[in-house]
Each structure stands twice: as structure tokens, then as C-alpha cells.
Length: 571
Image (cartoon, rainbow, N blue to C red):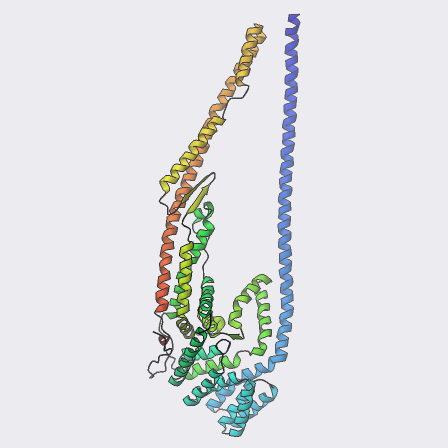
């Protein structure tokens, strides 16, 4: 009976082995199929994401194309309306400079000038420049009744522009007393809280030394009066400080992606560090801008008449307030076309230009525009100098406020995070402590990792089972079971060594990489602190530069004239 049992048992074990093998093969096959399904799922997900991205790009591109097409259609209509409504203004402007030159050089008969100006008078009803030119022709021909009637009509249509126009004409003709009276009339009508756009022309003329001593003294008194009037308003100083603060913040440079790469990648504090560095670099950018404006001498042009011609040309060629709404539409549509249909970006650029294109603006806003956006404000370099000099008190207040904010908000503690390790530092002097903490972390990970590499749960039970079988059966089969158990335990024991070695190698490699990254991050932090301090010193340089500016040094003078103090309150 026992013998039969010995014969049957091996056969049963072989059947079990075959079954287990088949189960293993089936399991492997199922695993392969699952991996294939996962791969297909990943591919499907990737294709879906790519499709969604492509579709979103298509929608955005299509929207931009439609915006471009719509802008192209609208810009034609806007320009057609401009031509229909104000085309005759353009015709008058184009001929005005030629008429002025003809009158000066006397190369055209007075009758021809009269005929041309009277024709423009009929073609441009309501436009101030047409009767102004008729009055000028009457003055040249000594036809006082005609000149007076035309002058009255021009003043009725636009007192501001007519006064400025004749102020410039009389200056060009050398009529200094008449020049001062016309400009005095022009200034009397100005509201310092809502100046006309063409006032920049007068400011250009003063800053460039086009006018004589009388006008400079007159303008000095008027500007001083304006500043006192504006300064008496509640919240005025805060308003100017805010205006210049906004202008300075717009000059903050971005930190390049090639800078501080380790901190950028491994410091959760990097957004604050980047913002702080961008802010502190602002002072250097503004200082360089101001130095570029003030470096070098402004030499008086020997061709003063050419300067007057340039100012007159600006006055007669600039579009009028009536045209502004359409001009603004035209500019916005141009920006849409320039940005390839990106309406949001076009709106952003358009909004940034609006202060320089306002119909009315405070005198202080004009100064800010001339200082920070001279091209849009149509301000000369001399006017830019003059405007900065007049604004120096507000510039210093804004700069001091921004500097105080920047110094208070610079991150003092910087976090570093590499994998599972994280640490905190201030100035890079914590290298030893941080590297020690890295070593402790990885020693602990090694300890727990080695502890996790254990013999299988049935390691010792299988060995005991083999011994029990060998002792209990006392036959070949029992000893085979024991041998199988010993072989199994030996194979499992052999696996432990490579696993431990692999764990040590991986942790050592990660430790070395983490240590290297942390040392590199600390080195960048040292460079960051050094640069931040260097850039911070430029705030004081900017302050000193601005305080040293005086309006009296920022205007041209005619050859032979003594330098006049333009602003009595300047140091």
C-alpha cells in the first residue's frame, strides 16, 4: 500500500507542475495583452491630447484670421470716412507749409496767395487753419480789414490753435512783442488739468530755445502758477507718485530663462526670487534711460527758422480733435493687423498708448508722457529732459516708494527641493548643514531600504517543512523535498546580495546628484544675493541723478542770450 502511494505521488506532483506552468504561461500572456492594451490606451490618450491641442490652435488661428479679415474691411471704411469728412482738412494742411514758405521768400505774388487762401476758406468750412491763412495773407499785403475779419473768424473757430499758430509765425518773423502777446493769450485759455494735445508743441518750442527771453519768462511764471495750483489739490502728490510708479513698473525687465537655471528648477521660492530680481533691476534700466537722455550737450541749432518751420509743420499737420475718434479706430485696427489678429494683444498695446493720445490731459500727465513715451507724445529730446527735470520731485518719491517696497519684499529664506529632500537657506553659507541633512536622509533611506529587503515569508517554513519531510518519511522522496527546500532557500539568499548592492548604488548615485544640485543652487544663490545688492545700489544712483537735474539746464538758448532760469523753484 505504501509502495503504491510512493508511485502515485510523483505523478500527481508532475500534473500540478504542468498546471502551474500553464497557469504561468496564461498569466504571462494576459500580462502581455494588458501591456498592449495599456500601450494602446496611452497612444489613444496621446492622440486625443494632440487632437485637442491642434483643434484649440485651429480655433485660435481661425479666430485671428477672421479678426484680420474684419480689420482689413473696417480699416478701409474708417479711412474712407476720414477722407470724406476730413479730407479737405488734409488738403489745407498740405498747402499751409508751402504758403508760409512762399510768403517768406516772396516767390509767389500776393494775389496768388490771396486766391489760394480764399479758395481753401471756401473748401474747408469750420476748419480754423483756413481763415488763419487768409488773415496771414491779408497781413502780408497790409490789408488790415481783411486780416482782422479772417483773424476774428479763426479765433472763433479755434482760439487755442490760432493763438499758437500766430505766436509761432510772429516768432519766425522776429516780432518778439507780438510773439509774447499771442502766446500769453494761448496760455490764458489753457487749463492745467486738461491741456490740449498741441501744448506739447509749445513745450517743444520752449525746451528747444525757439522763443526769446520774453516768452521763457512768461512761460516760467505760468508753469510755476500751474504747478502751485495743481499742488494745492488734495491727493495731488500721491497721484503723481502713483503715475510715476506705474511708469517705472512698466520698465521692469524680465529675468532670462538662461539665468539661475538651478534655482529656477529646484527652488519653490523661484517665482518670488525672479520677481524681486526683476524689480531691483528696474532702477538700473531707468538710470540708463535717463543717462541716455541727459548725456551730451544740446547744441543750439544755427538755423532757428528751420526749428520754427518744424514746429509750425507739426501744428498744421497734426490731426484735430474732431478726427480723434476715427483716428483711434484706425489705430486699433492697425494694431489688430500688426498682431496678426490677436485682439487681446492689440487691445493691450492700444490701451498703453491711450494716455499719449488723449484729447485732454493734465499738465503732469503731459510731463510723464514726454518723459517716458517721447515718441508717442511727439516730444523732442530737449522736451524729454525738461519734463524729467520738472517732474523730479515726483520721480524721487515714486522711486523711494518702490525701493522701500522692493527691499522689504526680497525673499530672505530660500527653499531648495531635490526629489524627496528639501532644505532652506538664506545666503549660501549653510552648505555644510544642508549637505549633512542630505547625507542623513539617504542614510536613513538606505537603512529602511535594506530592512525592506527581506527573505520571503515562507523561507524558514519551507526549510522546516523539508526537514520534517526528510525525518518523517526517511526515504528518497523525503530527502528530495528537503533538497528542494534547501535549494530554494539558497537561491533566495543569493538574490538578496544583488538587491542590496543595487539599492546602495542607486542611493549613492542619487545622493551624489542631489549633493551636486544643492551645491550648484547655493552657488547661484550667492551670485543672486551679490547681484541683488549691486542692483539695489543703483536705486541711490538714480535718486542722485534725478535730484541733480535742473530745468534751467534743460533748455536751449539763442546765441548771444544769457541763460535764463526757466523755473524759479529749481535749485
